[in-house]
Length: 234
Ligand SMILES: Nc1ncnc2c1ncn2[C@@H]1O[C@H](COP(=O)(O)OP(=O)(O)OP(=O)(O)O)[C@@H](O)[C@H]1O
Ligand SMILES: [Mg+2]
Image (cartoon, rainbow, N blue to C red):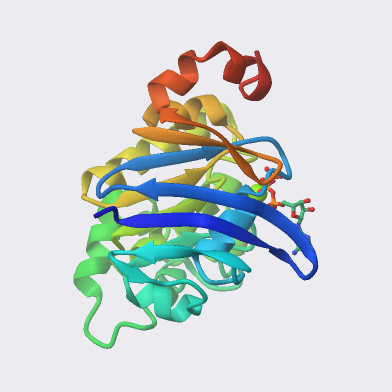
């Protein structure tokens, strides 16, 4: 049984259908990368998986249960976390308060989990009293990922975690993603930075105009000439 499967998903905004029959699967412990041009529907797919949009057709299955049309707060409780492309932190709160917000549905003591997250991101521990609104893009991205990890998810979905970051910072974020995966968390990542994300992915999907175009191992997608020319900048 796959950890997450999407089967024949149609979804969009009002009358505008963006995803036309999109299917995918994620096995436990995998890193999956979804690449594709601007407007391909990558963010729309993540929003549909996470219950922010309702598919008009098709289904989403997580750990063997249908989550199609389920609300995000229910999906979170099943072990899925999502870091949106934009507005993924509370700028007026400190780092520590942002992480606390991530744990808001936990009723028990989350101090042990907080230490796990600080271990993955020692920088956040050092800056825990700082307001996030004053931090750089890369630092905010760490806060957003740390917040999502507070609930100890089985699956972490990241929408363009390296967007607008200098190459060195992007590299650091990708390295942290690998470290998170090594703690046993499966990862679904959507990236503009297609080459870098395919390098760390077990498998990848190319989405274009709201449809599946290619599906293969990260390695094979990187080596594919047609994909290189069309989607990886030659
Ligand atoms: N909130 C919205 N309301 C209406 N249309 C939207 C909305 N968000 C996105 N769209 C449209 O849906 C299509 C797919 O957008 P989406 O954000 O999923 O693309 P993407 O692949 O994530 O692109 P990018 O790489 O630029 O982030 C685009 O045509 C976009 O204009
Ligand atoms: Mg997007």
